[in-house]
Length: 338
Image (cartoon, rainbow, N blue to C red; front, side, top):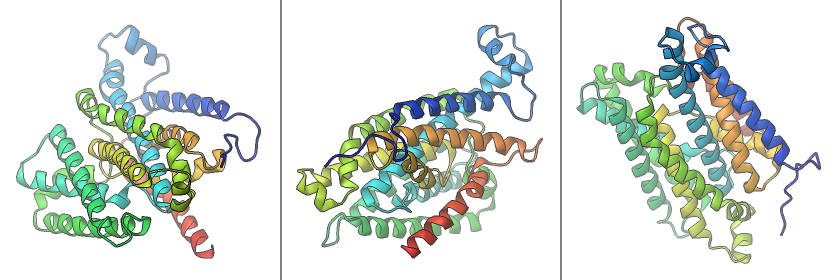
């Protein structure tokens, strides 16, 4: 069975629109360095890196906006790829990384850490967020594999929902009884990429790299698996091994994203659908397009979060639902009609 590497509506090789998307990504990255509460000119950007003079504008670019743009790049791309993998292995168009309880596990770990440690640093929160995301995802995988049908898309979805409810209930209980914990992390809980530094990014960056490489290695197998488990097995694929490898990639990408930026939603849900309209169902193209598209979406949403009530700022995690909720409703309505 062959899967076309051409767009549904065009004979143009997909490498051309991918290059175009990378150009848009580059412009979005520059916009993230330029727009915000402080006025930065386009001329300041190259000078901040080639002729740094210690001025306020140069300091803002190099110490505040550059790390923020890099975080948006990594988190948006990571969530886009993780969402694509989830929808591929579960064959569920409404799946995203939160189906594994990754978000809820990370949030619970951060809340417990803040409850036990007064004003923990971002590095500590990032470490425990990743740990919580990993433990919850492993728990979901364990419980999903206990049924008589083994590790099926349905059992994975049900186990993820159960772990999410469990973690969320404990999180809510802690926040209700401890106001200090809520005050200290409510900005992180809303999803934010502000205030991260280069050192924190360096610690998390290897997880993104490993997760992305693993995802790209499995791209062809995920394409076959997305056609159906029986079809994949008939073509000689080890479906269990593919699922495990894909879930390791999801844990690395989504766990690293949550540890950096908090529980940011909708990117992993909507981006794979938008990408499929262009490239079809071949994950060798879906994954790179989802990575670039997710990064573009988060970079521009972050710029919007700075400007919407300027000079104040809205957490970017509150901007994305405005964009994603209508699309989510559309998917549900389409699913019901289907």
